[in-house]
Amino acid sequence: MNFKKYLTFGLTIISSLLIAQEPGWHLLDVDKDGNMGISLSRVYDSLLKGKASQTVVVAVIDSGVDIEHEDLAQNVWVNIDEIPDNGIDDDKNGYIDDVHGWNFIGGPDGNVNYDTYEVTRLYGKYRYKFENADITKLSGEDRKLYKEFLKWKEEVETERKKGEESLQNVLNFENRVIDGLDAIHKALDGKPTTLENLQAIDAGLDQNLSMGKNILLDQIARGQEVGDIMEFKELVINDMKGQKDYYTGKAKYAYNPDFDTRQIIGDNYADQNERYYGNNDVEGPDAKHGTHVAGIIGAVRNNGLGSDGVADNVKIMSIRTVPNGDERDKDVANAIRYAVDNGASIVNMSFGKGYSWNEKVVEDAIKYAEKNDVLLVHAAGNSSQNNDTTDNFPNDDYRGKGFLFFKGKKKNYKNWLEIGALNYQNGENLSAPFSNYGEKNVDLFAPGMAIYATVPDDGYEPLQGTSMAAPVVAGVAAVLRSYYPSLTAVQVKNIIMATVNKTSQMVIVPGTQDEKVPFSKLSVAGGTVNAQKAVELAAKTQGKKKIKKTSKTPRA
Image 1: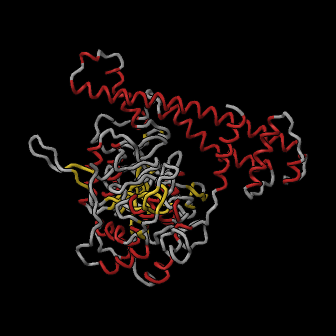
Image 2: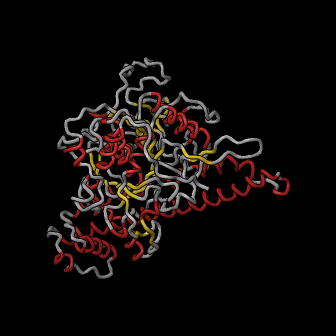
Image 3: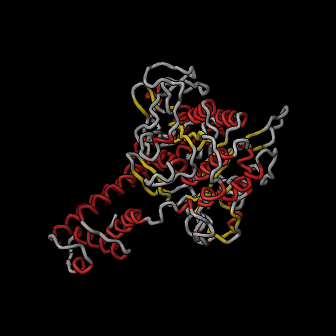
């Protein structure tokens, strides 16, 4: 890779240090504060002031949650029927010492961190069947499967090679950044890192000096103060750690068909209905994503610490199910069932994938949640894709009962909300550029860019994704179920859908440069979540049986 490409690649990474948006912008008033927040302030200051509420349990099916975080510990769910650390299943629910939730990707001697993608598992499953098969002797069904196998194989091998190349690029660039900043530090010899002092450095043919000088000049041009170069270097290295981890995962684990994690867990993976496995470590080795999601929903409000959650009377149940890789259908199904059986009334699911190993086992769990009045809130995905035409699992589609040779009609579960991500910018950039969308299969949008919330070890960071948008909606749902406990899961869904801020302004379609459509065409409800309007409608609706639904047509 030549120098210019290195620099472009590097500045893209470094610019992520500069994400600057007011912490808590997603909670602000859409009219009063002039942004795209959820209008939460009037909810607590006026609409709900002095009203009684019930504690609502929200299950966070994710990578794990730091349950000791200063801004979360007070709002962590406790299984009062379980005696901690006595090695006994006191409440007889099948899970030993599940005091704060459960970990379906852990075992007796450790936890899964990295895992494969589902496409890799499918390729690995059929590799020995088809790798050296005589195609002319394959049956009709096997011929169809063989075509799928070839598609899986190409994707796995191509993406693994890309991962290896990208990892090497990141490692090479990191070395160049370190050498460049070290060279500038030496050249300045104690002088402050000002524009004048940097411009006075003659880099000549010294590539290290050129690299360091260009990086720092770029930072100053963006209006950023560099300060101490060595401290800035550490910031850059820490920021690039995520890049290194991501590409390491792709190269060594995600697209490696020989990598198998189930030996850590010790379950019988062939038995997709097996339920009782895992351990009680609800944090795991990498809880950043899950801790952030939990904080958006339920960080303690008004305590003077880093961020406020949306809901004020909530308990977070951590169900660790999502590795650095694709979650497995068996684990997701068991996580949903665990949440339902142990008192959660809302489940947040900030994960997804393009393939499914066993869609039926997840569908059965969703149906179980529906029967038990539990609302499921799911992130639409970050691939800038149309979910109406591209697979995204899990989802709320299922087929009704068929008859003889006729397939059942496609239907949708009534307790499911699919959430796209909203930008903090109004106008044509209203939808986050990475967000999935779909007029039939994404229900509504919620703030998902630069959301400031909890991360492990009492930290706080701005992160972005539909993963951040979903818990905003889960938090609003928790407020409704807390203050208006007679509302059913379906009623809460319909209230949230019916009270969005609708807009038909033209916006750039995610994943395109200049293609524009009315924002209302990107989701079923055609708008963005609004807590104030939702609470107002909930107050009028409590005790009623029906709420006017927003129409939804299942995926063709």
